[in-house]
Image 1 (cartoon, rainbow, N blue to C red):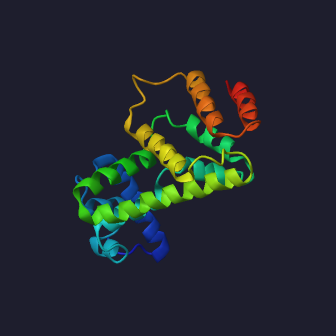
Image 2 (cartoon, one colour):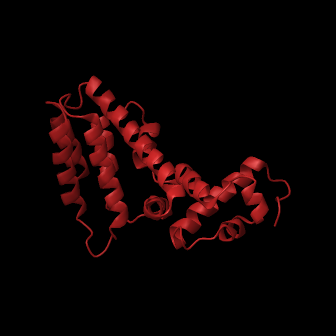
Image 3 (cartoon, rainbow, N blue to C red):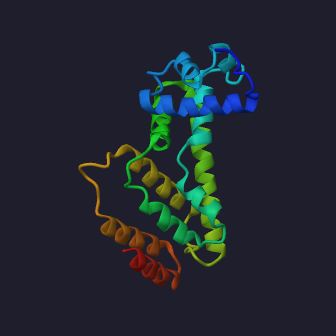
Length: 209
């Protein structure tokens, strides 16, 4: 299983990242061998090491490429959508059962507690996500959607904590009612929104209730 005929280096790298995301999410970081990922991707160990120097590097690369990014996907689909609506929409998906992309970040966080090779890069990854969220919130404050008295960094931390917590909780037997969850989220987002925006959120929640 060397380089696959007719497959470019970029395609091989993507095969490895997809395989790594699936295998890490299923078996965990400690339970995964580099050979397992190479086999799942259909390449040799040597081919894997020509793209990634270590299992830790592959874990973080897989997380960056295939980690769950509900809010970023919503923003990419509709760049002009108000930040408060994006937060509300992304929050609605949190109680849903995670796929491998959701569990991948959990495995990376657990590995970072035990492996110094993962801890540093994972700290950088988390900081990048918080900075991205904080800039998004700052844009909402500049547009008059989000209360300017609030700390963008503190609110970004709160959003990230909710997202990470949702990856840890199983969907059953504690699945929350969709309408009740939506009502709670609307109240929370309205609390950080400026006057007038909160009324729009109430109307939006009623339409989806």
